[in-house]
Image (tube, rainbow, N blue to C red):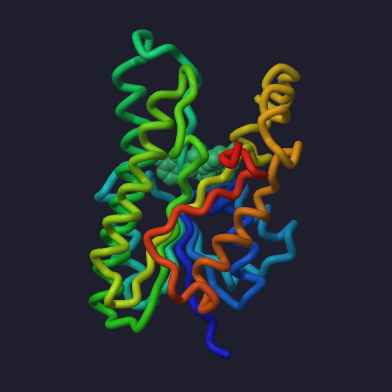
Length: 248
Ligand code: NAP
């Protein structure tokens, strides 16, 4: 059977890497676009993934020209999945202490990066005359609420949901479906320092009905479902995967 292709930004780490493992296990090839690519080949080898199934590109998602070069080089592939996973969560500050450049950097990566990759993906979808495709935007529970000191993260993750809803309508009749996932607290390199902090851990565990952090694979499972034919009538949705956090 011919392999399909998924593009995953931030595919070298955490949730992105778990998505890579999930899609590879379902007969996809994966194109990773990541900022730092050292060590990814070793991770693939440790996970028992053939390097033939993965194409690794170094690029900063906040730089449209860099992303455009990557998309130009993969134009002929006909990728049918894009997962916008690259993101950062800057250290917390009250708003009056925010550094303006740090604010802009977070918007550039978390929001603009998703826009740039989605725009380029949609262009290729149209040029390649594909019958169907899916975009997954990795938002957050912070796309539905705020928390002290996290204004820029929360603002970008809310915005990614708006991007999802509008883009879904742009391409709904063409079967290019666009959905967002809102991970709760997930064990990844992004949260590993916080997880060492008992205060943080206890605070979140009292807020999460399932009383545990999530695993990156649990986000990947949802991403795979949303891209599958099982979700053929699902577009413009935000799916929280958070152990019940937003239900409280
Ligand atoms: P992670 O392990 O730190 O992965 C983030 C990935 O994004 C890394 O590979 C990182 O590359 C890449 N990246 C960062 N800036 C980039 C840039 N400018 N250009 C290209 N790639 C860039 O964190 P994660 O937890 O898997 O996070 C993945 C996504 O899930 C993020 O959007 C995050 O906001 C979201 N999320 C995570 C949680 C959670 O609890 N973990 C909860 C809600 C939402 P480098 O390592 O090279 O910097």
